[in-house]
Length: 327
Ligand code: TXA
Ligand code: MG
Image (cartoon, rainbow, N blue to C red; front, side, top):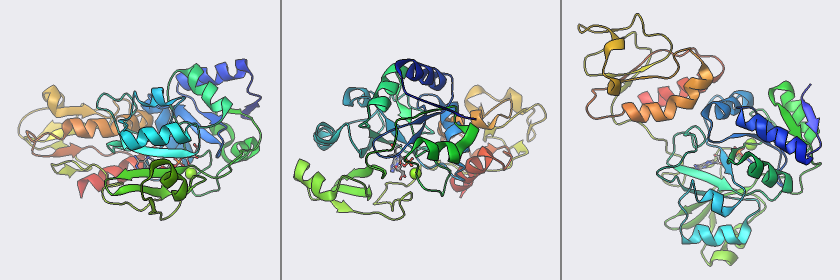
C-alpha cells in the first residue's frame, strides 16, 4: 500500500528526498491534491505522465515556493508581477515565457516556449518545495479522465502504489483547480476557470479580462497558446535507415542501422545524431524528446529520421507527439 503520512517535518524531509530521487509525492494544495515530481528531472516528470495515463503530453503547472523562485524560470512582465503580488500564494496560474536558461525539463511545458506557474497557498506544499529546493511539476493526482482528488483517500484510491508517498493534510479548501491565465497582447485571457474570476483579475490589474475556456483540461487556444512547436524540417517516423543528409533520432541500439550508401549510423557526426534512450527506457526517452527534436531541427539537415518507439505506456504519448511533428 502507498504510505499516507501526516506531514511532520520528518515526513516532509522524506517526501523531499523521494522527489530528489525521481519519485512521486501526493501533495496537498489549497485547490486539489497534486501528483508532484521534481520539475528539473525529466525522468521524474515522465513518470507523472505515465501514472496519469495520458495518451498525449499536456503541459503541467510549475509549483514554486515564492515569486523569487519562479523568476528563475519564467519571464515576468509588469502585469504578471502585479498579479503575482496580488494573488500568490493562491489559486492563480500564470502562463509566461520560459526563461532562456530555464532548467525546468522541457517535458513540463510539453515543448512549448511558455511555462504555467503558480505558488500554492498551502503550508505543506510550500514547505515541501522549500525543503526539496526545486520547483515541482504537479497535475491533479488522478488518472486521466477521472475527477480531481480533494482528500488523501481519493489520491490513494486513484493511484495506489503508483504514488510513492501521500502527505495527508485533510480536505482541500478550494476543491477546484486553479484559474489558468494567459497574458495576451489584447489583455488577460482565462483559459481555465477557477476560484479567481475575471472580475478579480480586472480589479487587480485594471485590464479587461475575458474567458476562453473549452474543456476543463483542454483550454481552447487563443492564438498561438497551445500551438506546439513543430520542426522546420521533415520528420520521418519508423525509419530503418538514414538517408544522406538526414539527422537521426534513435531509440535503443543503432548497431545495425545504416546510412544509405554511406556506412553505419553510429559513425554519423555528433551534431547529426541523438539517442532518446540507448537502453530503450521510455522514461528516459520522454525526458529527452523535446530537447532532442530541437537539437536535430537544423537547416543543415534534410530531415530527421526517427527510429520506431514501442506504442505502449509512455510510448503512446511519445508517438503521438512524433506523429504530430511529422505531419
Ligand atoms: O489547482 C491546480 O492547478 C492543480 C494543483 C495540483 O495545483 N494542478 C492542475 O494541473 O490542475 P493540471 O496539469 O491538471 O492542469 C494544468 C492546466 C491544463 O489545463 C494545461 O493545459 C494548462 O494548465 N497549461 C499548463 N501549461 C500551459 C502552457 N504552457 N500553456 C497553456 N496552458 C498550459
Ligand atoms: Mg487535472
